[in-house]
Image 1: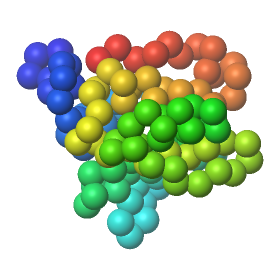
Image 2 (image 1 turned 45 degrees about the vertical axis):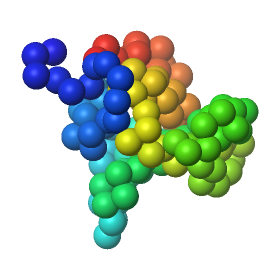
Image 3 (image 1 turned 120 degrees about the vertical axis):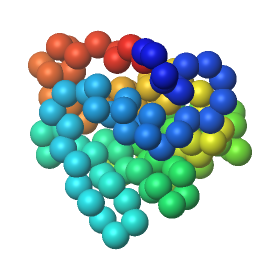
Image 4 (image 1 turned 90 degrees about the vertical axis):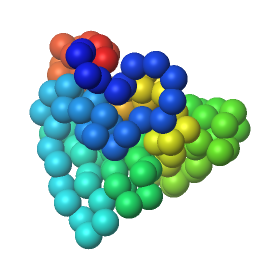
Length: 124
């Protein structure tokens, strides 16, 4: 995409995180005092805290543990619930392609099977 800042190494701006989310289907946005939440068909898959330039994403517990162990400067454990592990991602420490994969996985874990099967990993 012309003028995009999502390709290549370096931090991901908040606006590019939002653009990644917009490529997914049936995303519902909610607003809190300091955050925006993202759901698909009523099931939450992510949060964005613009003030801290972080996002929270639903992952498998195994993926949550692997991310935090690999790069604790970028990922931190948020909480576990319902068999899933939520991870906080520092946008300043992740590349766009990796973030897109994590956002897609968070969405896929929350989307109904039929919808998830229809939507491939978004291209940046």
